[in-house]
Image 1: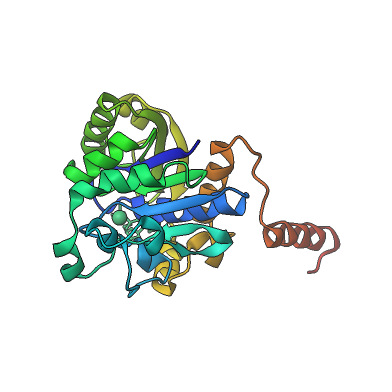
Image 2 (image 1 turned 45 degrees about the vertical axis):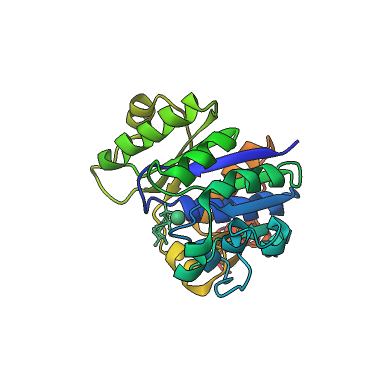
Length: 259
Ligand code: ADP
Ligand code: MG
């Protein structure tokens, strides 16, 4: 039985694609069979985070009835499978958004965990991914403008039968006016399951086309996402090898006054 998680927010640019990609890789690193699908068929950018831009066969082809989803599936770090949506306007023109539902149904049972990187807003493909994901992971920034869209998305998802897994507060800690976890929980009536800090490594990783959890596994945002991945599957977070080594080095350095 596939666990499907819709990563949604309402508002654009809050970190859905960043969290989808890195949570997917982190879960794959924990031994899960994970597929990440770019359900943002109009403003696709999942492929950029994996350095997969320019792939000939994408979700657009599948939605144009030119082949099964497996034709547009690529392998990423830790064996995670990625279905990019394609960035060409030509491909988008031929893609039929109504086919998304069939694609998602076809993918069910083909993978252990299916992550749907949902588009912003409440358009057709956003609503389809909200309807087909069993679990909703709501991404929000700790600012008031992010809250009303997140709330709308949550209400629609619940109406469509999804279970709210929780809220990821992304890009936290940038401003003194940041909403607190308690405030966010009260406004959204949902639990904050992770707080991912603002981290300059996120942009560097996306510029390099390598997921953050691989490129900078010890960066604060990567650690927060890896902890979330472990929590989601009920495992204990184990720090990355070099994270442990650097701690030991610092500890020994502190004891003996040297490195
Ligand atoms: P969405 O998919 O919701 O539109 P993205 O994941 O594409 O959002 O993120 C939007 C922008 O914010 C990107 O440039 C991304 O690199 C940046 N970003 C996301 N999360 C963080 C973070 N924790 N720290 C710093 N920059 C971030
Ligand atoms: Mg996105």
